[in-house]
Image 1 (cartoon, rainbow, N blue to C red):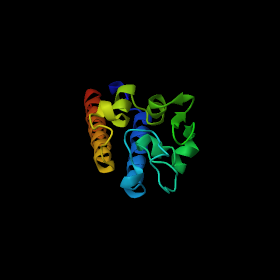
Image 2: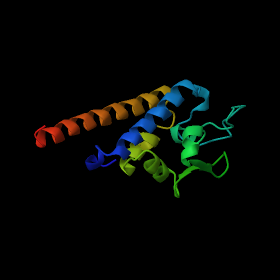
Image 3: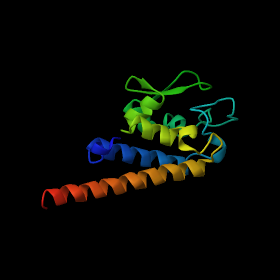
Length: 152
């Protein structure tokens, strides 16, 4: 989400969608079902309901809310990749959450985030929560500045 877009409806919808994903990861996904290093990995999954272990994006693909929006996991469970509106992988997540590609990598990439592939579910959730809080603060500050510049 580019800085000039922070006040857009799309930006707000994207942040709300990230919040939905975070709540799901907190309440519906167990630590054993999470691996930040892959979208999906059925080889790590031992009797998991969804048949896979994966990162935030991989689990996002299993959620009915996001599936109704058109998000799909393409390929096999072992090497599946998120697809949305004709885009795949990080680009699909960028579109779904109205993020810049840099912010998408910052959130969804173990390398770019600096958290590494073995980051725990709770560590990654906190990473997402900090991002959401920072962007909501930027949004509030931008709104205040806009109102001030208009003399309101």
